[in-house]
Image (cartoon, rainbow, N blue to C red; front, side, top):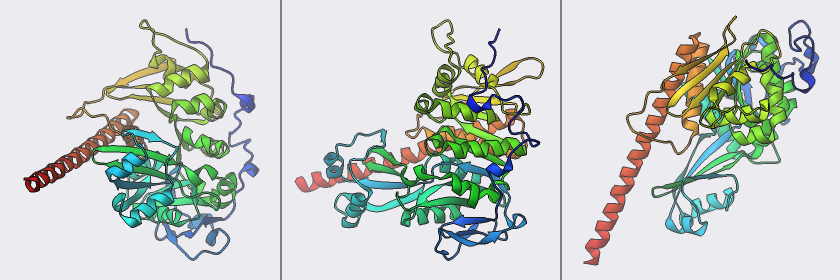
Length: 441
């Protein structure tokens, strides 16, 4: 028999749902005319944000009435990062003692040094490729390709008041994503630096200004656009930046009958930010995670160890416990979705009158056995496919199938691109070797 659900965490121990429309306190998040940050302003005719002259106060354009604002199908709260790709020579790789296949936050060099090397052309070859980066942007880009072009998507976060921040907003506009970003004068725009050397690859992540997102930007500058969104997606990763912002958006979704999607992101967040994640879970409608994340969540958040006959945690029991975790409103019917590589997807949800229902969905193997170097490819693609189907009113089963299809498509494409790149490098090395052999004779 399943144990009773734990009490609501902290301030959630109340007799009535704290976010019901009858007793919600709208003064907490005031509704004011929106002005967009930086050099951006909303134009209903274009559906997306267009550049305007900076007004000199960190915002642009004139206040907009609610009826002038675009409807946003999905609002993503995440880290607005730029992806920078550098191709380096042997001397650079050896100078900084880089290790292939790694992803780190501490960089042995500065971004200014990389740009200087690029200008000189001595240690870095070719131009720097700059694209939108990070898990949230990958999900929104994938989702952008799956939904109607006339439907709006938006990213909320913080960038630096620098050229990279400006480039980020321009790339978002080009992708059809509204950049509702605040500007930081203290830190540079966050970056994902990919260093490529022959067949090796390593990555450095500097979140930069994305860590400086303020609740005032959400409440007083873009809240009118928040009210125009249909659903919100964020990850536990943003808890590191501003957990209050996550909670405000989650409360808004429950109060207004919108859907709140949440991804557990990484086990270490659950270990070190347990209380913050526990405060958000009561508002979650759809919870995404992988096997390692849900077992960590089960052990730390629920506080129990459940073992099967082999001495391992059971994903099914962990999923049941998270479905049973308290909700902020009785109308919330939480669904927990657990991906596990090529193993079947586990889905746990309430089964009216019969407790918690567990379903398994098989994952079709790829034609090439492949483990992507960037693990976000599969997980973030799955979320994009699932949400795209959800926004089109698909059934849960079809949402799972669409998420799986998009994940497999993107992983297969990444494999094909990497294979083609390796083949090209092998041919170049072979040609260089033959060239040296010819002149050596």
